[in-house]
Length: 414
Image (cartoon, rainbow, N blue to C red):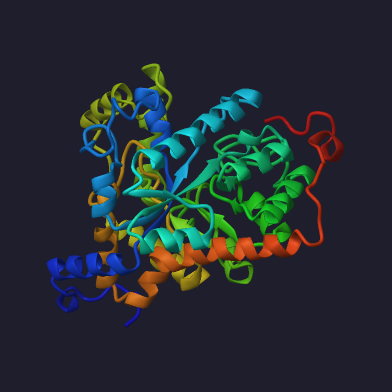
C-alpha cells in the first residue's frame, strides 16, 4: 500500500490501529528531536525536582512526565538546553550551562527510567535496558557566544546538536524569523559548521533561514538535522523546510523531524497565533511564556477567540509530503513539547505519539517505514556524524578561528 489516505471503508478499526501502533512503539520507540522541559522547569520551579516531581502526574502543568513518556512509547529524547536569544554573551553561555546541569540532574534522579546518552551506541544500549536515552541539543547559536572553544566545551558536556539560530539572527547566521543580515552563513558561520562536523555534533537547521539551510548543506561534510520543523509546501511558514532543501537531504544523509506546533503545521493557525502572541505581549508576557500565569492568559484569549485545531492527521500530511520529497530514510519526529502553548488534539502531550503512528498505519505506512521514522533514522544520523568526526580528527586540529578574524571586529548585528 502507498502512503495515500485510504478510503474510509478500507481503514481498519481505530482501536485496532492504536493497538498496532503501541506494539510497534515497543519494538521501535520514538526518538523525539526536541523537548523544552528543561526551560519549563527553570521557569516554573527553578529546576527544583522536589517541588515538581516528574515521577508524578504533571499534566496540569507540563506536557511531559515520566509516566507519559512511557505511555507515549518514547525511547530517546533530545532535551533542549534552550535559552532565549534575549540572553547574550556570558549570560547566554551560563544559562545554557545551567540547562545542561538540569538534564544531568534529571537523569541522575531517575536512573531506573532515564540514561544519559552521548553516542548512537548509547542510545541502543539504553533502549536494550528499558531506559529512555537522554541526549541534549542547544537551541540557538547565541549559546556559544561566537566562540568555537565554547562550542567544544558544550560538546564535552554532552550536547549533541546545536541549532544555529533561534528566533533572532546570530552574528554569523540568519534566522528564519529575523530580517536577513548575512544572506545565510558568514565565513565564521561556515567555520562553526566545519567545527561541528569535526566534533561529531549535529548541525540543527530548525529555526534558520532557507539560505542558511542551503549554505549549511553546502559546507557540511556530515548529515544535518532539523530537530523540529515541518514542510513549507504544506504550511507556508518560514520555520518550515522548503522542498528544494528537503530534496537535498538524501545526498547529505540528514533527517528532518516533523514538529507538532500548530502554527507550523496548520495554515489557519498562523494568523490566530499571531493575534494570541500580540495579546500575550499586551498583558506583559513573552509570547513563548508557558508558565501557569502565561497559560491562563492564553486560555482566556482562546476562550474569547476559538483557535483552529490541528490533529494527528495534520502532522501526517506533513510526514506524507516529507517522505515523498526527502525519502523515508530522512524523516523523523520532533514534537516541541513544553516549548509551545498549544498542540494538536490527540497530540496534547508526550503520551500522544501512538495516535500519530495509528494515523500513519491507517494511511498504509508499513512497520518497516514507521520504524525508520521513529527510531532508526535518528540513531543512524548521529552514528554517521560520529563516523565523519573520527575521519576528520585524523586530518584536522580544532579550529582557533574567531569571528573578528573571519567576519570583522563585530560580525553582523545579532
